[in-house]
Image 1 (cartoon, rainbow, N blue to C red):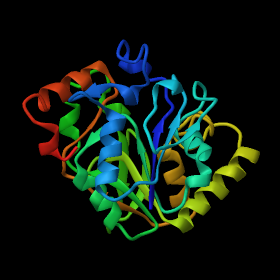
Image 2: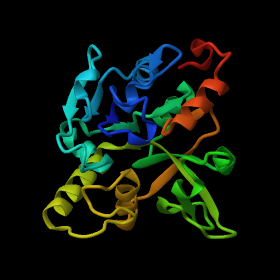
Image 3: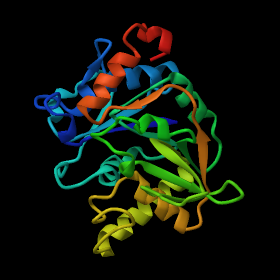
Length: 256
């Protein structure tokens, strides 16, 4: 098993913090977000770690890490970054670099034994209260059918009386589904034009979109339900929230 951290984005919504560093290099507890993720993966026995960089790639430099660069980072998004690391895609955990989370979440992903597992939080709406710079309309939602099967993954699912959760930006692909992901994305790169699921184009598509593509291909995408500590650092508001929430907590006590 290996891990890929997606860290290519411009991080414009986190300015001025990202004026001179990539978003994943923003620090909490005197450690960058990426460094905390690396520590967690290694504590869980995952030493094969890759980072896909882009914006200010030279600022990301950790020992014993494999690096890939998304040269088109300013015009592409998450799926293109995954494709940049295609030689590493196997039995793989993929996560965005702007996340801080408890080690138990990665342990759950390691224990997952299906084809595609995605982290999902059911009690997700409270974290958007007062989050004016990243409103609830931008949530990466997950829709379940009556049997609890995931049938849709996209932003801003508004279906009253439906079972809707939030995708937390961490997923695991089996070796078989990694091959399918790469095959399908490669085919789409050759032939697809126009919008792609919930994104304006294939090259600007995010993980949600390829997850939905796999669902549409008949792949059983399963939820890994999360209640543990997890935060996305997307805006200065998020960073302030994280610093307040964890102000009096030693990071070693959080297992991060």
